[in-house]
Length: 154
Length: 154
DNA sequence: TCTTGATAGTCAAGACCGATTACTAACCGA
DNA sequence: TCGGTTAGTAATCGGTCTTGACTATCAAGA
Image (cartoon, rainbow over all chains, first blue to last red):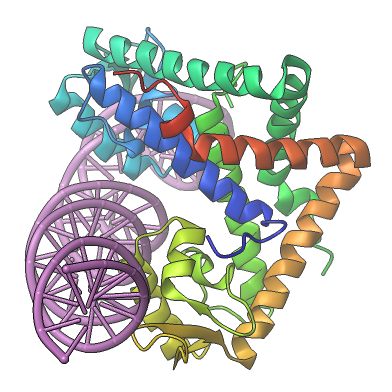
């Protein structure tokens, strides 16, 4: 630790936070009976619903290509976390439905994240954390739309 | 856009923000004469100093394994962004020193990030953004140390 | 001076992950 | 029924991190 930069840029900061969150989440999940879920599986598991969700919806929600979603679902099927069911409303489509094991993972992952947030809330203070949380959400939303609102004159 | 989850978890949020930041940063860098820098190069370029920095320091600052830093430096050397110089203080060590081209990239990257931050500041309001920025930094720092402060009783 | 343990950097193999292109089957409106 | 669109799959490629091992050097002490 020679000398820490006085003001790390937003990009570096975000990358460091994501890595740190992933480390705690997946390490703890491993200790709680889910040692074989990996970060990329989050693109499916984090957006599932008990009744099932279409691959295309998962793709839109997570921002991943639908091909990537396809391979992730393949893995999760063979690991016993989800199954594919035909969508009664559209014969082309399939619903990705969580199994019992999948529902357990989803619940545990949410609990771990909630614990992390509570720890942060406790340290930062309730008011400060709530403000941060809200601003974070808004910043993410804004930045996701930079192509429209940003500096695209010419 | 079927139905957006009411409160996306901190992990998903962070991932989305990072992706959005990367898109704008590297797309703009490409338009400004640096089309061949990629996100991973940030682990070196974002932490460089004009006088040079050791690989080990870059590793510690970025959180990447030193082997990864080594390959990134290889790439940046062949792209003309940095060069390796012997460290006069330690014959084992080498200093990673930015070239003119590298200094230009670093300056432009910082300017782009600064522009993004200014845009966010303008939308959120000066006070709110400053609070967010500060809390973000603290949250990242806290989460990076979860192994010490976290729930590690047994 | 000689030893010993730690540190700087590199090599090599393997696992992991996302992007791209192309294709089939089914939908839907004219 | 024709034609454009959408859901999902297949196959491949390039990029990225992880792990373990190894060499050279340093630094501290017997």
